Amino acid sequence: MCLTSQTGSPTALTAVIQTQQTVLAAMREDAEVSCQLLEPKDVVQVTWQKSLHDVETNVATYSKQFGPRVNDGFKDKFEFKHTGLQNCSIVIKNLTEEDEGCYRCLFNTYPEGAFIDITCLQLYA
Image 1 (cartoon, rainbow, N blue to C red):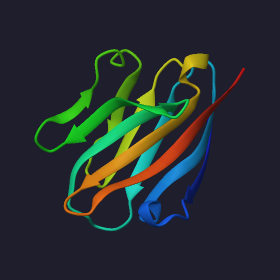
Image 2 (image 1 turned 180 degrees about the horizontal axis):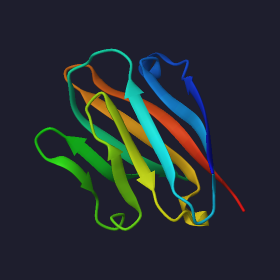
Image 3 (image 1 turned 180 degrees about the vertical axis):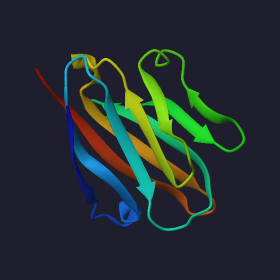
């Protein structure tokens, strides 16, 4: 069972993104994390990152030119559920303690720059 709470973030750079602030999921299950851009923007690429101890690690990207790509080291753990430049979601498979934490979605736009929001994954037994 996966429970989510959806809100928009109050900051200016994230005001146009809808995401879950927290996803609650059980160990060994799968969890979906999604981001939706609420205003039309010229998005070049969507990037998913895992944040751990103030360090962001790129997990996956989606672009029109290259399509969906999960980075090496994450291919057995992450997959795209929805791919799009305005609405994008990933699934984190077979959850373990190492998966708990926060995930950032970045809508990389031109010329405005990145619109960013964060969803945190919390596990229960």
